[in-house]
Image (cartoon, rainbow, N blue to C red; front, side, top):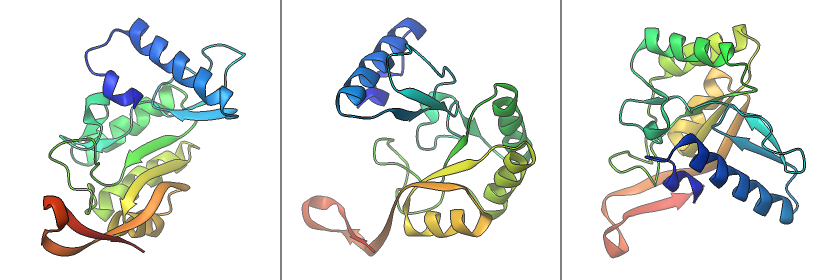
Length: 175
């Protein structure tokens, strides 16, 4: 996965990773790609980029290493304002923890419903749609309740048991 190669790389190295990923996507028939970058077009022969800037996440939250960590209402407002000033196409929020970010919980929302509602209201006031990265059922429900414009993944993942399942992993179910 390309995101695993982001931390510690220079802007030139990141651009090379993005360009190669876009070439592979185009070869597979993809013509538009969403990204955490704000650069919309690497090369006009590659897929068009829908830019979001760094995804908004809690401190220590999923993909926090991309630079979108916030804590509390004032930082949420500032993060949305920064994205609007950067002229992003969409505001992306990590509505739950992630499988590739150690220490986060994939089964629970990262934000309170009030915080997520604030983010959506601020983004909509600026004319920007919001997509929520959400596998967990609770995060999907929360995102729908506050009026996000799109949900990425939405697998509706729920925890069936508090103890570990086979192989030491939590027992899970997709609804």
